[in-house]
Image (cartoon, rainbow, N blue to C red; front, side, top):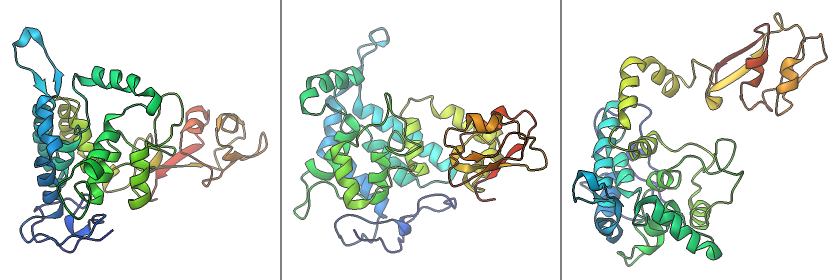
Length: 314
């Protein structure tokens, strides 16, 4: 995988936490850089010119009969998601080009007839491992698109592929959420991860998270924009200060036991799911950070407020 040199066409006014094209981890296959477009702009353009993107025109998403005879297609949906995502991205000082690329590509692998179509296809393909539209998107952009002689797929940047793979969040580790317990990685994503190390246990970039949120619908960004307006300090604490003022984000919170306040009631010891707290009854307890997952159970049950928390960087 090759790195990307300094880009002369990066967007102005990027926030410190935005993805910068000159810091991109590059592409799997080496290519000469463009003199007129950043690496993320090229990703966006490759997605727009792909065959899979044009085919979205024929994939119905939903048909609301009482609003008229206009079908909502995956193409119109993706264009609207990209427009909304760019607006939110601009407000947050993120990289609009990367956000737009992710928004345009997020449904390349989707079936027609909405999620009902995916459910039906997944059932029909059970004997062959089922079907997941997000994995199909990865398969399309890395293998099925045949537009270049040197490689299969679109050869998108690491940041774009990482955002698409983690469209619904981390895929394994403590941050992953799966119905019915842990699941194996989809084969196409697992294969790509072996080649590029997509860090699947962590959250994707903020650009990817914005694109995923805006995919929920035209009104989805409204709560985000409202909270930015009224709780900007909370956002800045999370993004720039690496801490959660409310103490509810496990990855940004570090708990501790105040030795002067602890009465050894054993309540925290009893609820800790990872045995991170040790100590005898009626004696001061100790919290071992190497075992703590910051679940907050000890904080919730302590009757004397002896459990406190700080930001991860504190």
